[in-house]
Image (cartoon, rainbow, N blue to C red; front, side, top):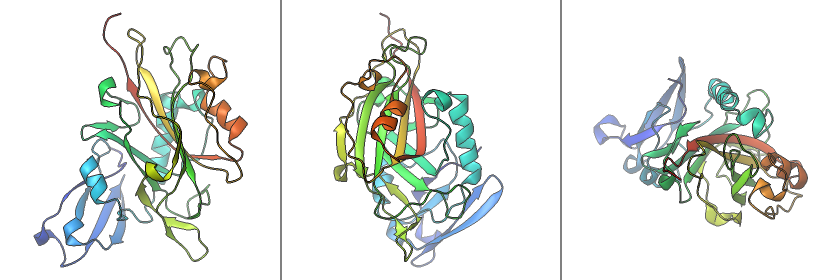
Length: 281
């Protein structure tokens, strides 16, 4: 099992030093020591199973604590790239890009987005909790990120109205811009490391969240989250319509919108799931 992120569980006082705990994370045979001071009242132990995620409650508990520091994610990044290709996210939704971190998404305690798993439609009607973990500095093709950078998140459906009929594709479900990342910074202001929940209240929701609504009998739809670093010189605008992202050209979508309106924006992370309406017409 490829280690993707961490499930947290309450650590007992007996298991911990008096005030702090050190973490050790195993990634496909490679051990990385993560020494981060955490108070006992908020200390957690790590588990590295991909299919288990922190609950929403625990997400909130750890929001102000950096649990992953300088975590080498090259092996994980390669696995992510393989998933994007396997499910045709690349090349149907985006072109090849350099993954810069982990996008962890949770609709509820038992509804986690996990690179192509299937969720129930009724589980995905509210905005999810999303956490992003930046790759360790020093890796190849690293994108420079500073503490002043802004980021945007989108959700798109490339299978509207079905994966065989793309007359409405892509369908824009959500765009929120001007998000900030809680980083630890170097003296020059560059981001050293981070693991943070995206705070929607500090962003601009230029296209309100609309939950998945695949028509009955159209099979499974892919719902793709994309996080990108904004070009500070650009004022992002919502598309004029949700189907085809307002282009009226079947098969167009996020990629066309970002090329036209995004300036020098840089895609840094993706996650996605499937949903299907299995009811009869």
